[in-house]
Every structure is written in structure tokens, then in C-alpha cells.
Amino acid sequence: MESKVEQADFSQRVLIKNILKGGDSLAGQTVKVGGWVKNSRQCFLDVNDGSCLESIQFVVEPSLYPLADLKLTGTSVYAEGKLVMPPKTNTKQRIELKVSRILKVGTVDKDKYPLPKGKHSLEFIRTLPHLRLRTDTMSAVARIRNALAQATHQFFHRHDFLYIHTPIISTSDCEGAGEMFQVTTLFNNAEKLEMELIKNPPPSLADIQAASAIVKDKAAVVSQLEEKACSDEADEAQLSASISDLTLATQNLYKLEERSKLKTGIPLKDGKIDYAKDFFARQSYLTVSGQLHAETCVSALGNVYTFGPTFRAEHSHTSRHLAEFWMVEPEMAFATLEDDMRWAEAYVKFLCQWLLDNCLADMEFMADKYDKGAIDRLRMVVSKDFVRVSYTDAITILKEAPKKHKFKNEVKWGVDLASEHERYLTEVKYESPVIVHDYPKEIKAFYMKVNSDNKTVAAMDVIVPKVGELIGGSQREDCPEALRERMLELGMPLEPYEWYFDLRRYGTVEHSGFGLGFDRMVLFATGLDNIRDVIPFPRYPGRADL
Image (cartoon, rainbow, N blue to C red; front, side, top):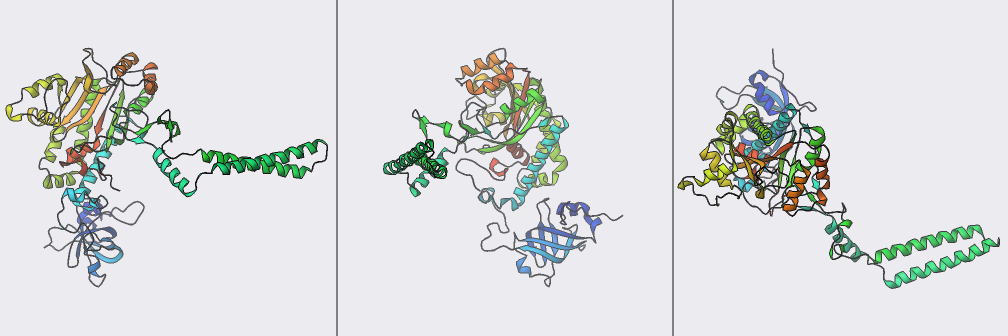
């Protein structure tokens, strides 16, 4: 029985991945295919549509269309033709398209197109965010990123988590570090007002005095007419018209007086910025995490997760940091730190297995071009139990590391683990993902449950080869008194978090959660060295292109 090529649901276009999947069983069928030219020679065009890594060869007769307008790299071609088997001498192509009709062409100016055929560095194509997805590397990364996003939703759906949307604009600082992007319209409004007052200057004192005199005159007329009305001598129509004139004059005076009070610059009150005049009538920020809002949901819905962008105004230029990055943040009700670690391990294993099952061709490309061990690393994660070690034991291990592994960053109890420490534990000591737990409370956030030793908190980090920390999580403090004491200890204001205390006052439960840095997961999977290359439009200090 002849196979039928899979057509897009709502268009006549057929994806190249579906053609290649069908192979020679589709020969003889007429299809419409669109994509971008990667390479060309004579009347042969290698066309890719982004659906997969491989391209399909278009065979275009010179009499059908001017080949000079089709052959340049980057040209878009939408064509109709018959799928045919290539000559036996052509071992590269499984099936090709013999074009019978060119439907649409998007030409390229060969003197200006910045991505001609050839190899380009990742640093160079990073300067072309609007075009870099046309490269094999960035398109492969995009498909791997998509696969990981699909796997995320699959994992939590299978385990009965509810997907929730937490706000991007927040008035709470989840991490308590203060490195937040402020959201305000005060500056824009001040600039608009300044420009408007230049164009239309505010009224002078003379203007207001003149308008006030008009109001007095019209008020006198109305008063006289009202006196006549008492003696039945007034004209009611004239009185009504005079009252209307007075009303308009009064409104005009009020507008002039209000306009005369307008001042340029940021509104102040008691010498400080008056945020009551801001859009939300209070200070607000881009969220650094959806966790606190997710906790309101876990207290009513059980297990939930959120997946979205977060923002940190941290002036970091390392290869592992972005100013805008994506986080997957599940919260689990009736869950301890032990449960949290189990969920985190299962989720990371699921992501790695999903790539092996659903995105192998792109992973093979990344392994061939960038990191020979990328696929083996995924298999290692899937096959090994994650090592668990307390922070205290990790410090001891690092102190006892051989001299050849001398660290740049100091190793002592009470300091956060640096990337080099994390990679030593995962790549050298254990050759496995590692979960470090029970960190000193001084280096962790206010919401983490303090352990009975009053020195550590029920926190954990999942660290993996290549990137170090991939997941950070904890059991949340569910006792309102303990939470209050911890926040006061850190010098945090209590009033903005009254709603957060309510979650502990009314039907509190043990609950835990974690955040997976989604971009770091893509970095781990692809084997690339810079996190700016695993997100389509990277934002970092000094750069926010497009």
C-alpha cells in the first residue's frame, strides 16, 4: 500500500521532516515544499525548512525559473513538484523534489546578506539575532530547546501537576537580594510632560486672573437673573444659558489652575520619589522567581508548576548568566526536602531520556560539531543514581582534593560553592550528577526551613557536569513564627509579606519546591560553552538586541 505524505493540518505545505521520514515510499507524489537555500550547484538546490536538521534537494530546470535568483544562500523558495528517487550515483539524497512550478521566491542581495555560505563563529552570529536561527547550529539548539519544553510539560502532566501562570510583574523580592529590574512609568511620563509643556506652555498668572475675572462676571449675571426670577421678571431661557456659560467658565478656570501646578521631573513627596503617582501606585519589579506566587497555589491546588521568564539585574558577564532567563518551578504540597530531591532527580532524568528518544539527530549534530561527549552525558544521567552529599561533607571532600585540583576560590564552611567546586564534585570525584543538601542558612534565602541545628537549612542543589548548578530547591518554612524570626534576622521588612504569612497562618502544610534553570539545561544538553547561545534573544549587561 502506497504511503501518503503527511500534510500540514491547515495548509498545503509539507514539512521536509515528514518527507524524509516517509522516504522512498513517497516517490511519485506531488507536494508543495517551502524553505531556505543552504547550498546550490548547477540546477540543484539544498533546501531546509527548519523542521529538522536535514535538507531536501530541489531539482529545478533552467527553463522553469532563472537559476541566478534561486541559488544564493538564504533565498526562500516555495515550490511544487514530484517526489522522485535520486540516481543511484547520488548516495547523499534519499529522495528529492523535481520541481514543476515555483510558487514564491524571496531573493537575497549577495553583497549585503551577512550569512553567506561558510562557517561562522558563534560570537559572530550572536551579533545577528534576527538571522542566526538560519544556521545549522542555532536551528538544532532551537529544536532541542523545544523538545525540552515539551518534555517539561509531559513530565508534570503525567504526574498530575497543574500548570499555572505566575505574574511577570511583582512587588515581592523572592530572593531578598535586591537585584531586581524596576517597572515604572514615572520616567516616561516625566519626559512626555516636559515635551508637552515645551510645546504648550502652562498658563501664566495673568491668564488665571483673567479666567477668574470672567467667572466672577458670569456669576454676577447669574445672580442678577436669579433675583429677577424671584419676582417673575426673569427670562428662564436666558437664566439657563447664563448658568451654562458660568459652568464652562468655571471648568476652564479649574483646568488652567491644575495645568499651572504641573511640574517637570519625577514626582516627589517628603524628598522621596512618590510612587503613589506610578502606574501601580507602588514600587514594582520584574519577577526574579515565580516561587512565592506558586506557593499561594500549592496551598489550594496541591502540586503545581510554573514555566516562564525571570529577570535578575545582576552585572554578571559569565558564560552561565543571563539577565532574562527561563525557569521551571514546581511546588509540591505535603512534601519534605527528601521528596524534593526525588522529584528533581526524576525530572532531570526524564528530560535527558526525552532528548535521546525524540531529538537524537540534533543531539548527534551537536556531539559531532561541539561536544563529543554530549550524548554519553545524557545516557550517564539517565543510568546513574544521583549522588547525595551534605554541604558539610562536600566542603570536607573539597578540602581533601589532590593538589593538582587547586581551587581559585576559597574552600571553607559557610561560603557558597563556586562553579569549579561543583564541577570537581560531579566530573572528578563522583563522575555523576550530585545533590548537595543542608546548606548554611547564611547563604540561602529567607523562605527555606531552618534545620534543628539552627545552622543549616533544608536546601538542596542539583549539580551536573559541564554547567555545575542546574537546580536549586528547598523545603519551605511553614511555621509563621519561625519565618518572622528569620526575616527579622535578615533585616527584611515584614509588611510587604503579610500575605505570605497568611499562607502559614491559614491551613499551612509542609511543602517544597525547586527551580530548574531551563537555559542551563539546554547548555548541559548541547555541550555549548556560553549560555548566550542557547536562547534565541539573549539579554545580558550591555545588550538587549531587538
